[in-house]
Image (cartoon, rainbow, N blue to C red):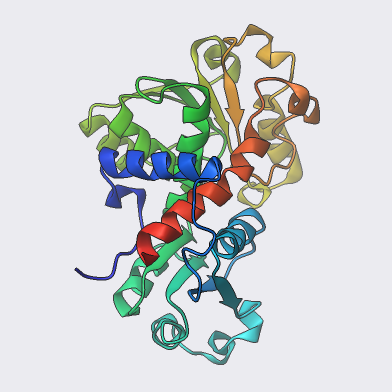
Length: 300
């Protein structure tokens, strides 16, 4: 059997996803061997800033008895001298038992997998994929309700938001109905929307977030990137129109959950944090058991 990589959520069928979610659930109940990965080394190659993804992978390997190594920053590694990503991966795969990589260029993780002799896990590649985030998102949803047949609204930057792309793809396996709310120019890419519709997924576009609140089970909010707008006024006009507030949620279903991959800026009012709908901090915490399950899958 060849080296097992996790590059895209598309690498999994529904059974494969469910098995990982089940395993994360067992880990969450402390049903795991704390020495399962003793002696294993995880190389953490992050060429973009990260807090949650990086630290949760480092926590995950540590909780399983392994250790992690990293270059610290892009400026501190030989890529700053012009070394290619392919050569970096060739070298690092000689030092570690698995590599987790985040890179600003879409397709970088798949390139890394071609040159690595050890498993590669994609921790986000440009506007492409973010499979570990999607798995923990699904795990968080499943803690509150069955995933099958849910109505979910994706809100924010759906053009460049890799978390939204991965999640939408995964939910097409669960008969979910997708509602989208995004600023002009930041809609879900047409190629992705067409692919999802070919799989039988219903996608409903909305201009006003107030339209979707009464009809969805999950509200998945993403950060709108200020740098995409020509001036601050344009940005604030868009970001304030889709801001999640306690008043907005008054008409929501009782079981509605609000998710966000974090970091947030001002798209969710801090007052929502105390609402029973808010699950984004639990979502972040779920990154540890989910990534533990992923590491066990590729390293055992």
